Amino acid sequence: MACLYCGDGTYLKNPDEVSRKLCAMVNKLKPDVVMCGPCFNYLNYGKMAARIAYDINQNTSSKAIAAMSDDNQETINEYKDKLCIIKTPKKGGIGLNESLEGMCVLAKALYQEKEIEEFKEKILFLGCCLASFLLGGKKMWGIIATWRMAVEGISEASHILQEKGDAGDAIETAIKAVEDFPYYKSVGYGGLPNEEMEVELDAAYMDGNTLSIGAVAAIKDFANPVSIARRLSKEKVNNILVGEGAEKFAHKEGFERKNMLTDRAKIHYRNRVKEVREQEIKPYAGHDTVGMVCLDQQGKMTSATSTSGLFMKKKGRVGDSPIAGSGFYVDSSVGGASATGLGEDLMKGCISYEIVRLMAEGMHPQAACEKAVNQLDHRLKERRGHAGDLSLIAMNNKGEWGVATNIEGFSFAVATENQEPIVYLTKNKDGKCIHEVASQEWLDHYMKTRMAPLEEK
Ligand code: ASP
Image 1 (cartoon, helix red, strand yellow):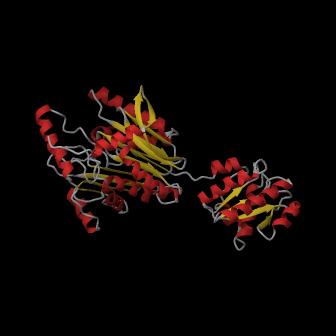
Image 2 (cartoon, helix red, strand yellow; image 1 turned 90 degrees about the vertical axis):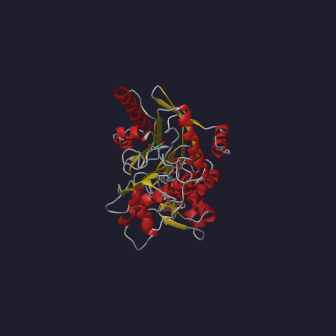
């Protein structure tokens, strides 16, 4: 951000508090320059502008400048040795209607050599009162992800986003955290194997600015499939690679090799083989994809997924997660969505694309998710008698988010400029999805069961 403008509106009411709040805000946003100026012809406002600018210079690393007209002579005399004071062209102030003009004059004064025109776009005008400063001054960022397992990853990502980092780096960091954690048994290391006891992984990455896509499917023995997918998104062609081809590419590009089959996953496998034999349990039960959508402060959006797919799947089976439009989709001019559930059914609705399409028509992400999930659920039941699990998360380019599911207790995690990383549980009640913050008890139980010792049956 090139500069912030703090107007006058609320200075007079409680100057100490306003000054404190502004300094805290400036410390957080770290603008290069803060301009403090009055809009109207009131002497006190010039005085307050000077005082606030002075405080900002003392307490933050940003440079603050006060702006006022000649009729604040007393203030000008008092502060002229302590502060850079710019005289506004209008008698009395920048002037509400001439704010931009005033700002340009200030900018010109600040960057003397340059032309005013050059600065019109770089200056973020934040209105003339503290309220609009507080509300409008923040650059939104956000990240939303399927399942509780994503929360540590999105916490890491939120630090990157807060510091104006890139949505690609943030989402890759977040997904890698899930891939690396051995106790999450449906993603990356420790993921559950296929029918032949091999861990075959699917992952994807999409850049919402360029619409570039990269994906790998049924890849074995690499630590971070999402990073390989991101790397593939930079290629002009050959963006989706499967099996041996994906492994060759990853090897050539120097990605870390790793045996992804853990002892714990082997026990799960052997137990499942016995259960299937003895109780006719569906082999596919037990699967969760981590899917995310991310918005950075520059307005760039990304989406990514990573999964070991369905437990006991056939060798070579590819789910929705590496398929653009089904497992994920993002367009920075609108927003993005990502899916988890039964890939074979999610694909029947191209559901991530459908949600982005609905958002592009003006729908809030929550309404878009509910509409897309309810409609696909209904259509599948009508045509096929049943619908698999369908759970979707979405975020638009304003950082607003939505989630919908057709199962009980789908968990997801979200963090934004306005919200610390948090886990919610959601359920679908007559087509409306209700989100509740996960209780500490639920969170503790979740981790305990994930990490509990596992016995071979
Ligand atoms: N959608 C994934 C797949 O079908 C699995 C999941 O998200 O639970 O491979």
